[in-house]
Length: 484
Image 1 (cartoon, rainbow, N blue to C red):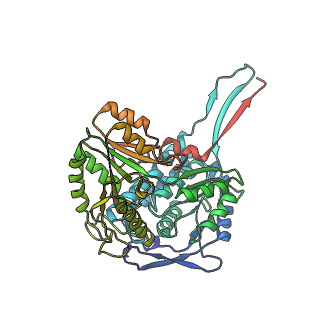
Image 2: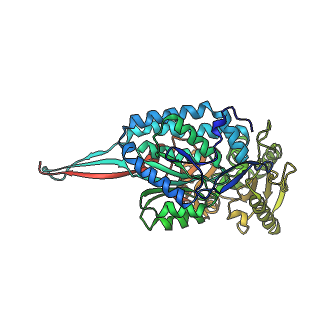
């Protein structure tokens, strides 16, 4: 890995504006999933360092929160510019530690930076209200103030954008942050911290704690009385546990948890559009996204026509090391991910499904899997209930609109869903009937800084991005002015 700006490769936690080793001098290795090479070893911090980071954030909060929104936004825009100036290095760093192709990594850097720009501007639009009074001797006013110290834990699949989507609204609102990135991908987070320091953030405003022990760090974050807000992106199982821990101090919580996204193709869909949208949704990041299409429901009248083109598109995907030219599908994150795919496919085939494209480990390496299509799936198969989190498309056939809606909603998750139709009346009916926080209509890629991102049911609480995202980091204070 040859970086032009070698200072971006950091391997220690970033606490109170300084690079800090673990107090016990322990480290953990960061591995390139494409070839198994050790990239570097990173400080394996623990409870002590997390408490130090929280203390630093608490100490920095009063001064940072008193800066005007314009002042905070000016520093954020410097950070935004520095990220864009280093996009080539940041993308290479991400591809090396996470595996996604360079083109996707660059796209994520741009997407991640867009949250910094958006919230740098949105900070100036945190408005209160003057409420009509019920009595002439008083006035009712509401103001919004930053909630305080924010703790956050982010996943490995989007190691930049998941961080900026949390940090940006928090610091724009006037909060300070302690963040733990995934152990698989800490280097992107530390590179962001380096650029944040270069941009001029005061010490303690942004703190990054690297660790291989997520449970230990999470416990300190959720139980600390100094932390007023906790944000987590990850599995529903872990999210529930962290939410319970947050109850001990009654923290404000944001959770972006698991998904089981349906993608419905109706008979009246534009086939070319549907294939393009399904491919974009399903195979981005090798299928390792919480909003990617997990179940593809195709109406019987268009089934054969859609599958003919879809199989061809899937079979043409180029698998390999993300740093190689033309690669579209990189490695999965670890051996457990490969084993899960094999288990889900085995269960589907045992219950009557047929693999029509792929279905095997790829020759590129032990963490690579062939882009796969498995047809004839039904609701009795595990693949209809669990997130695949890999490059596998389970195909289900349906007859009526009502059946498709019932099948799509038959899950405890409610993060993202997609459907394709050229019928305007159907578009409204189905969009309103689907129990999901995000719905793509004739579109497979819907995420953007301007739109709210978040789920219903067991897929989470709260929204990230958009004008709503900054509200998660604010408290509403009611002022009653009497004696008038």
